[in-house]
Image: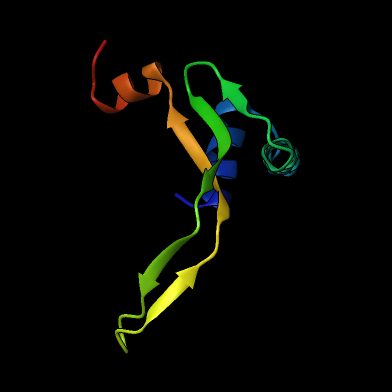
Length: 93
């Protein structure tokens, strides 16, 4: 499912217009990105938690040449699924 299909599904489930659902979805995503970028986490109970983590600098290997390269430290995005989400995927009730 892509974003347009998600907007269409939510619009039909809530009897709302696609334009209003798209606006709310865009605002939700932008808020999650802004919050995680600041270093905070966003917890949606029953769904999951969006957060950030740190990946240390390390050495790697160029697969084409075999040459050793340095990979810089980076911040990463993490998503941890909530219990209800995991149970739904595994069909537990």
